[in-house]
Length: 375
Image (cartoon, rainbow, N blue to C red; front, side, top):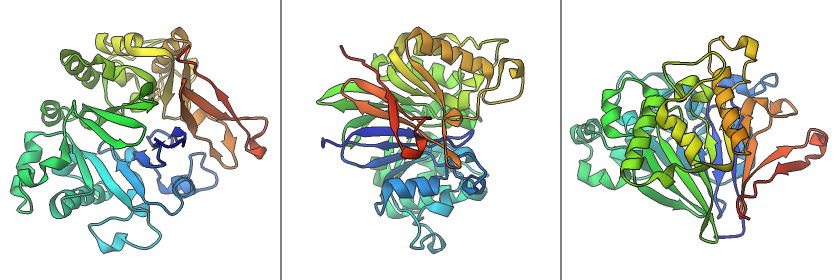
């Protein structure tokens, strides 16, 4: 691995997800893309992702774009920014190319998709069935296999090298590997909730061959999906793959990621296996990151969400008990018109959150909170 520092940027995109990982060789993995037209306005506090990614990537192609599931707050503006192989109308010189597209298997075979989702599905199908490259599919349901075989463009055997299942490990980047937790194929076909068909991964960052920052990217998985993930991981004697130093909180700090049925009055009490996930597998000084709007006040706790005050109270308790940190993307400091991203730097001592100093924003001064995980 080169000497380049690895970073994760969690972007303030409202109630939506976008995170950018920079690997040890300068490669980039973008997890979801939420840039509706309104985010480009000067009076919108959400970050303008087009400008931000252009600044980060310069004239490089994006190495990987992962879209975790089929809700538009995870792919808003996708076809306005990216070069799409399936149609010439999306191939002008101002567009950003993504070398690989990673998607859940349900995106390929689900019907009734409209608007931007249709463009995303068309691009994924074209890469899988026509080009047979430039894509990874997460999940291997019977519905996916049936769709491929019925397409008339490819057989399952021709494209099975592009399909990955829970339990598989992807070594695509310098400095970290990716363990796939979901989607589980049996749940994908029997669950109408798109949040439970999402991609959930653990990225294990390593420096000098030592794990220094295990990070869970949870998309919008709800509590019943987490119970399935926990059970499957435990049954395969793999619980270390659910340990975390950084956790991207699921579903924009909704109570449904802790207990889909009960929000609670002052705090959400998670179902048993979700409780074990956070309280037993969360590491000391862990960082919990909520990609969402500002947390409502106690007096506003019964307003519709997400985010939910009660869920935030549970995450705050976990962070406090573990001497960690709980941060919300849309509660970060402002610079110019937009809120700044939460930047997690990966160091040999573990992850540390870097903040723009509120006293020196104009000078671009950066401060940090260190996590001395080792020693």
